[in-house]
Amino acid sequence: MIYLLFGYFAIVSIVAGVCTIALRNPVHCGLSLLVLLLHVAGLFVLLNAEFLFAVQIIVYAGAILVLYLFVLMLLNLKSEEQYLHRTYPYVIFAGVAILGELLIVILQTPYGGAKGEATPEVVLTVGQSHAVGITMFSDYLLLFEIVGVFLLGAIIGAVVLAKTPKPTDQPKTDLPI
Amino acid sequence: MIPLSAYVALSAILFMTGLLGVLIRRNFIVVLMSVEIMLNAANINLVAFSHYLDSMAGQLAALFIIAIAAGEAAVGLAIIIVVFRGQLATNVDQINLLKW
Image 1 (cartoon, chains in turn green, blue):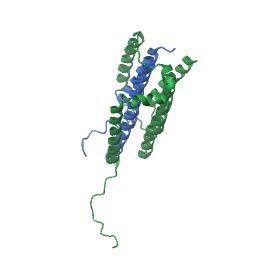
Image 2: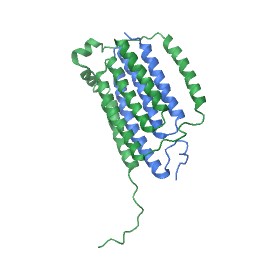
Image 3: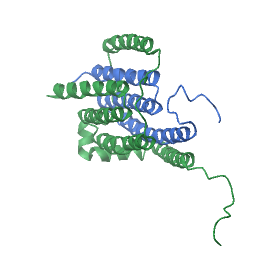
Image 4: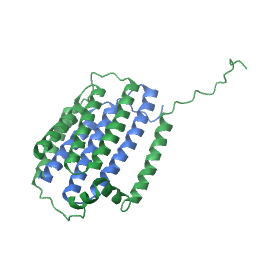
């Protein structure tokens, strides 16, 4: 059963990823990206990461993707005739060749390493979100604060960039006073 | 039990898909979407290693990557809006001026 689920999530996410970069209309690309994000969230469930599953759906599918689609609708783009660079066959050939070599290496590597303390039994006794929270606010507290400052900077940057420029100061003389 | 190499291979395929998208697409917004695919591939890798090595660190890194992706999307889309307003172009090969 778990093999079936993994195969489904893996195949659909790869197909959706290829659709994202291959479809002509940017809105269709965004919707394929949504399918990809939802199926990656399913993979997170298979990997016992329920908190990340929820975050993936709420933040990625709920916020980031809506932002993309919102901007696409705002700019009102037409789907163009030539939507790929002219050199794309060479790039795809090189990419597929590199990917083949990578897969050969990946599938032959014996994976191993030092195990940590968060075994499934330990995590199940406290709950997954609780375990993530404890780790985040103890070992990774500084990173958490840095991410907070980063997000504040990103928000301010986005607002300042996208603000409508003021019309150059022409005094409005025709106003009735 | 699914072998760890299956997850790593899936992650490599998705990462290469995103990289090809960045290299071949002309539309700036789709290029940013391809970057999101690459970030997701990295997330799969981190969470898979976190699961197989019984550690929480990978999941925390994936969580921070999601936060960074949100910031990147916001700033990138704001830049697209500014460029589109000035030049009426969203293709990466038409955006070739530093200032206009």
